Amino acid sequence: MTRLTLLFLFFLSGLLSAEEASKIIGTWKSDKELTFQHIEKHAKITPAQHRVLSGLFGRCTFTFRADGIGEMNSAAYTLETEDGKEIKVEAQTTKFTYKILGESPLQVVTEIKYEEDSGVSLFLGDVPFGISYFPDKDTFWCYVGNEVFDLHVREYFKRVKTDQ
Image (cartoon, rainbow, N blue to C red; front, side, top):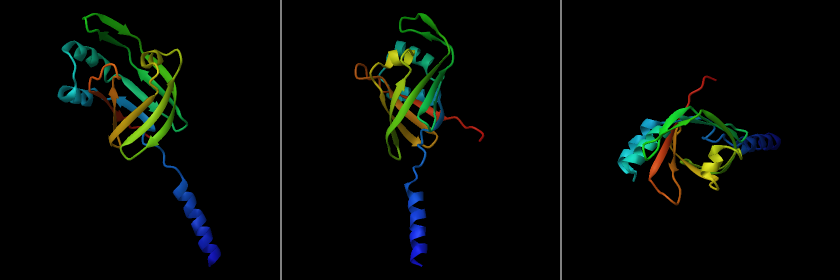
């Protein structure tokens, strides 16, 4: 009887120690509608900044694989600058590696390293850490901005459903 109990406890401990996959694993698409619902209520932006941001959101997908490798894909688009000029931005795919530094029921803290020569790494500079907030299992948001300009803008992402 003791051996059976020990075997059961050994089996149970293996189940309990197995890590659950992070909630961030999967593919996520920028949700322009949810993002602008928040912007309209809370953001501190000028009409010119609003025009610029409306050209940015809703075009990007992020994929986080369980092996710590990810990819950001952005469709081609035309961006209107604050002074009204138009810039054509080509479609791009940017690879990155990531590490989960912490996770709670509502948050995932990640360290992301983008490819050295990517526009993303040039734009973000030395800002490798991010906090993603999960109001539900299929939605997360993160702040847009930095310590120089705090626009109170959140970008929302929705999980892309895949047939498995």
